[in-house]
Image (cartoon, rainbow, N blue to C red; front, side):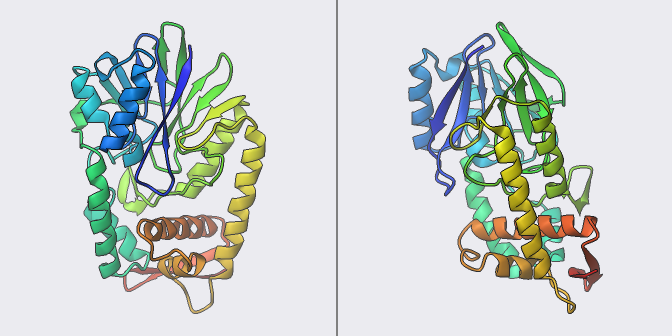
Length: 319
């Protein structure tokens, strides 16, 4: 079973996204790129080089539902006459925009985000959401942890690896210990633990950083020899990147905790200080807020800081 990487342009600062073609029956794409003319043209051209058109795709498997990974899903599915679409049921980006629901507003305002700033972020992501066509809940098959995606020449095992998003999945070829990781593992940057409502109780936040560390350890436990990433080149030394990630997270934890003072600070205030140089730049503001929330949640769960709610807003203080 040959995994064919295809690099697709995106309009985002992270650069090209990696799509993976498995040319065996059923012909499968893992991720598809954003809904832009440039991405569609690049994907059609690359697939044609392998003798494949959109009409030949039988299965679309999504690592997660961010726009740069899932945007062309509906177009390909329709042109292929209803190719099967598979994604974890905890994902939502293929259903509605990233900050579209009332629970998103409630969670961010509780983190100290001013209402006017939330409105700006919501407007920004309304534009970003145009890079994907929404699907209904009846239009996809849920990925389930440990299920097998079978091909003529082998299989991929689904590993639910939450953290970057609640429903992020990795695909494991046990025969040679190869992973297709989406944004769970990126060689050059540390994935962002995006703030999300908890899938089982949307009034609560998903513990993105704590879950991510568990996912990272789980991937390490299978001793991968090659890890295909959502962006950039593949990883051939998983232990090196595992230790680098853990070190970076530990260093970020120390910086975040150092910003917590006895008068109390919000996640929004910590984000502004932590990312002062890029805080007001487009999606970077939301990513900065997500990072601060994730680290404060993790620090609180470890008993390193305390948190109390005043006026509907969370304030963190040293323990």
